[in-house]
Length: 302
Ligand SMILES: O=C(O)CCC(=O)C(=O)O
Ligand SMILES: [Fe+2]
Image (cartoon, rainbow, N blue to C red; front, side):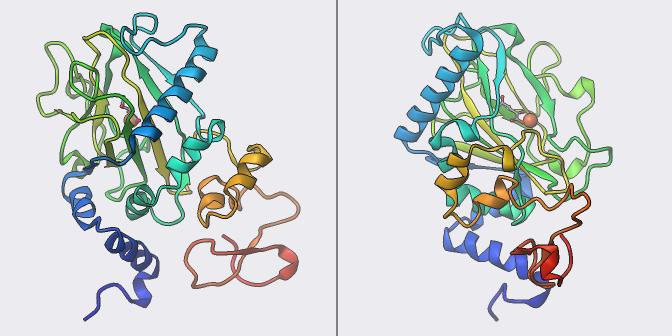
């Protein structure tokens, strides 16, 4: 029997076929079993370098201080560098990479929207810890499915002393946030169940929205840069404003990609006023394949 060609799982079948086509079955299984997976060489060296430089330039505009990747003293502890997707083409290409899209679609569905794209920009210092948490900031209990998911790209080498990402394997099954006494990643109360996600720049870690994660403080000279790219089911309010607020040049550049408009919120049908809802083109077509405006007058609204 051929798996995945069924009326009852039409959206899942598409997602599953893409996972098969790209040979990502092992990663899908790890997401279910452990709540996270690691993809080595997710980004090539040029992409890492371009993304890192773009973030350093934006950080310099934000702080007035030139980042020094080797020493990092000018940027102690950590700061967030937000809203990266529209600010450089490299970030749009990273969002549209087929491996990432296949895995996030497995977790949050084909109707995923980009939640935000930022960098946790970290220099040396005791204040560089991001305590363990689950990204699904919903009232407890958290749903067992992934309401939100995340791809964390290492833009510098990840080691514990360098301030890398930490994950508590299997924690997605607990369906709750860690308590304050479970969340530390440094000091005498450091959670011993947390595992450092060590690996070279270009590695990506993908996790389920319930998975406990954070990052260690950096105790060696230099800077740690990540690219944090959470995606959400569209019932979750996204963190950054895209949609029609995006520069037209960004929309035009990516308009040939079949998923850009949905990811960037351009197909968001909610928030209507007197004009009323837009209508789904087909009832059984899964999510938001096509919209018609009200005048076209048939189908269900999204
Ligand atoms: O890599 C890190 O510092 C953790 C970032 C984080 O918590 C997130 O992106 O949700
Ligand atoms: Fe997080």
